[in-house]
Length: 274
Length: 274
Image 1 (tube, one colour):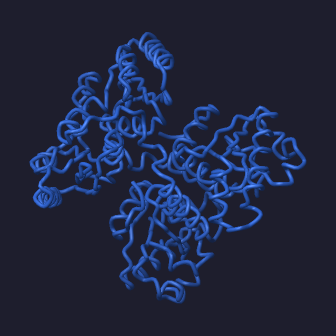
Image 2 (cartoon, one colour; image 1 turned 180 degrees about the vertical axis):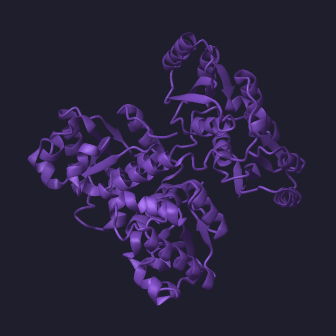
Image 3 (spheres, rainbow over the protein chains, first blue to last red; image 1 turned 135 degrees about the horizontal axis):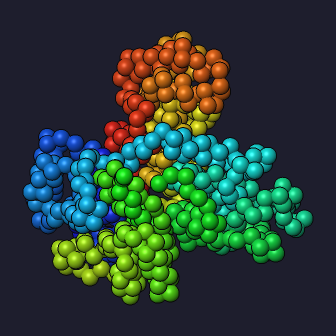
């Protein structure tokens, strides 16, 4: 029987930091079976008391201590939730002291600004980057490549669009994408449009078996989704990258986060906000 | 003079967890001026030694201890980086012990799976949700509203598209969006297309001054961007939400994360992966 346990993420704002921390730690116990529950926007003593009631009811029902990951910073709220019957893991408590001593500053104890709106300039850059990704998806607006920080190149369904959007939303990077067509592959050589932007290119590739599966979900039993076609496109595209010294990444077993960060650092891109 | 300090985010994988946690703590010291540097994919002793050299060079140059936020889990790598001249704040060390004791399990000490690819099913759902958001942006595919988990409604540039994409990428939620047109506002009442999906609607609104600014960046000095037009649209849209009991959120001073999570919990949406 695997260990089963309820886990609460408690936050005075979005809960994203608490979830990130908790999730990261829980992946270290992959034999266990965790049930997740986020209690966000916990910004009053009343809501804190309700959270405690919820955690205690869960402890009662399951006969086990729930795990509570907390990013609460306001002392009155922490004092309440800390007294629940869960194992209280206090993110701020653990690190804010050493930071205060090292910086010789008092922390503000202000609720959750990690995912608040930092300033309207970085917000605008983020939205601009997103609009750029949307407008430059699938090679329609190639005249804007001069504005791009990076141009992702790959065959259809190799992961270009989600990667561009992630780069935009998380790093404010202007990412365009160019889908390599069969025509491009037959001609060989880099497409004319890309020749002027060679330094900005980053290739995506994917295992043929996985691509066949993805394309079949989209257009079942088509030539487009056939293993023969997929193998042809993938091997030609990889050859194109190699011949032209375009760096490339295989996306098959990577998450969008891993692909995006690999490209961010691999291509030496500058993030526009933190 | 504000306190200035260099901050390193050290990770064996993407660095996203270290950045999220560190950033969250640093916002508690808003008078200080931090310089950020991420050292990701630190997965060998050689790379760990290089990171130490980089941190030490920075300590030397600045005459201050850099702050090092680490999510390293492999003992041999942690042992190396821990010996740098920075203040080493170890996310795993702080919590993995209490978790092991509570769960009565040993942690796997396996490198960074928090932002790895959990499984291909949740990956597919994420991509499906993203494709859904892209296909249902700006009210073009209204016949697919039956598949939507939520339909965001608001005037042009009130924040619908980034919110839909965030909901898709982070929660696997199928979010469509419907831009309220001037024609809709003149008619009054909910647009015909939305009447059948009333329970799925969530409104976005925004302060007229901010919307004027955003629209002016897009189409300077147009009627579309005029304060008169913007005021008219916003007040009519809010009235529409109120009359039809559509819950709504003002996006003016919120980040995309805050808007998305408010809607996620406010509308009781089910996230498709963690």
